[in-house]
Amino acid sequence: MHDGHDHPTLPERDEELNRAQITEMALRQLLHEKGVITADELRRQIETMDARTPAQGAAVVARAWTDPAFKARLLADGAAACREAGISTGPFNLVVVENTPEQHNLVVCTLCSCYPRYVLGLPPDWYKSKAYRARAVREPRAVLAEFGTVLADGVAVRVHDSTADMRYLVLPMRPNGTEGWSAPRLAELVTRDSMIGVAPARDP
View 1 (cartoon, one colour):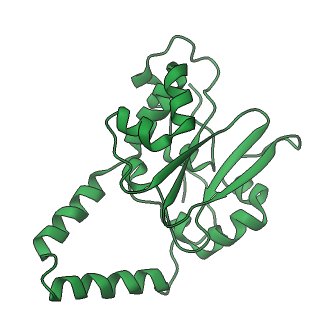
View 2 (cartoon, helix red, strand yellow; view 1 turned 60 degrees about the horizontal axis):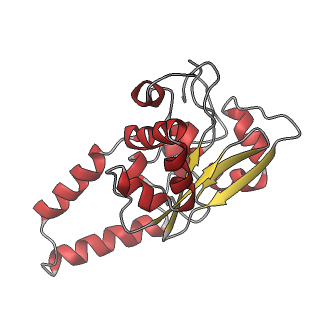
View 3 (spheres, helix red, strand yellow; view 1 turned 90 degrees about the horizontal axis):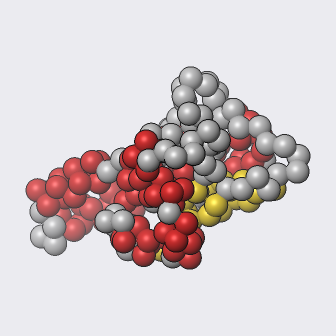
C-alpha cells in the first residue's frame, strides 16, 4: 500500500538479494573481521542513517519555495545549498531538478537503489524493486498513473537515473493557495514521493 493506493505491479521487495546487497554484506563482514570497523561503530552509523527522514528534504524544498535566491543556488549546486541549510548530502553530488507546468521529473536507479539517503532517509521498498527500476524508464507515464499522478499530454516527462556518485532530488511545484505561508508550514506539504517525482506536493 502507498498513500492509500495499491500498486500490485510494483512489488514491495525483491525476493532475492541483488549483487550490490551481497557485496555489501561480504564487505561489511570483511571489514569487521580485519578490525577496520567495530560492530559498535557500524551500529552507530546504521542508527544515524535510520534517524534521517524526508523532513530534511522537505525543509530544503520549502526554503526554495520562499527564497528565490536560495532556489537558484539549490538548482545550481544542490549539495552546496543543502550544506548552507545545515544538511549534509554525504560524499555524493546532489542534482536538484525542478518540476514545472511544462516538465515533470522522475528519479530512479536502474542498477540498484542509489538514493539521496542523507536528505530523504531510507528509500521505500518499491523504489528498490526490479519492477519500478525497469518500468520507470520504459513507461514512466504508466508508473506515475499508478501512483495517482496523471499528466497532461503536453507535459514532458524526464527520467533521471541515479549513479554511484550522483543523487537526484525533485523540487516539486509549490501548491496553489499557499501564498504567504511560512517555510515550516509549507514543508508539511512536501512528501518523500514528491521529492522522488512520483507524486505532486500535497494540496493545502
